[in-house]
Amino acid sequence: MKNILYPFILALLVLAVGCEEEEHPVYQVLGDPAFTSPAGGTTYVLLEENEEDTLVSFTWDPANYGFQAPVTYRVHLDEAGNNFQEPRELGKVTETKLEVTVGKMNSALLAMGMQPEQPANVEVRIMATVHPDLDTLYSTPLALTITPFEKIIVYPKLYVPGSYQNEWNPDWAEWDAANEHTTIFSVKDDGKYEGYLYFNEAEVYHKFTMVPGWEEDYTIGDPDPGGESGTLQIGSWGGNNIKVVTGGAGVFLVKANLNDATYSHTKTHWGLIGSATPGEWDYDTDMTYDPIEDVWTLTVDLTAGEIKFRANDGWDINLGDTGPDGKLEYGGDNIAIAEAGNYTITLDLSNAIYTYTVTKN
Image: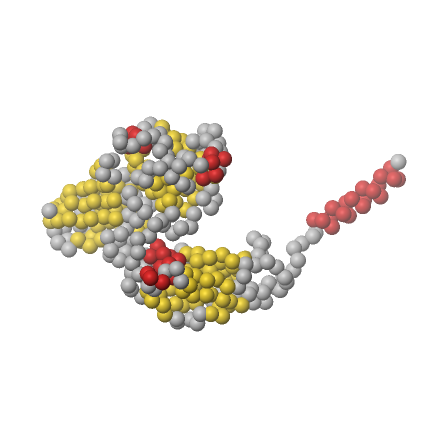
């Protein structure tokens, strides 16, 4: 019997070794994708009456991996010199051509913070992918100058119905998925949403919805019965309610990332810091939150100098104004105070774009 089994086992071992030594096909990158149109340096001036028209047809030579493979191309847009650290995706295709309308380009530029009626120097890049195990290929960036027009941007948003809504404002109903005040936004339209919501209970329960109502495929919750996993379940009514243990009333930075199906809550208290404030750069002067108006305010004596807003007496979450244009950005520039005096400062985190006012009394 042993004489029969040994050859059989030996054959299995040889087969197993052969499987372990199997490798992916050898490939050699023979060419990155390369733009064929438009020409670098092309200038465009966008007009609202043409927003449904095609602005540009990007075409390119295909990526060459050295073997036949289905390639996915993404066309990215970013401010010139930013090295595509935070690109906007203009489209994803499997062909070597992408048409972009005037309206789509205009929305992308405004979302990037480009000023209406001002020429913006931007770069466009092609990203080519085949498989996670193979190299991602990139084209040489294409430089363009584009002037956007002014238009109100409707940012993608998630509704956040929950137990906290009536506690926040008595005029609101709980678990109201159509409440436009309790929403978070994706300013870059990249699947990442955030916003600031007031939780006034020891424990808060909520879900997210992609539409202003309760629909099975568009409801988002937590797959874990405890509701504190940090992981999202999208569809099938969203699974379980998401639970937040607040530790007391406060304004929470709420984030939801639909790309990797995660969420988070960070309690915040905001203050003013800077050379113009009583604490200079050493400590914050606390602001006061008004739940009904949904703004932070502070009346304070300032000297000539600079200010910034920051949360929780630290620099992890801070806002400044790069521009300046009254709109706040994370880590933005210091805000100048031209002369000494008594000022009323407001910080509004209720909309997609965070804003502030500085008023001398």
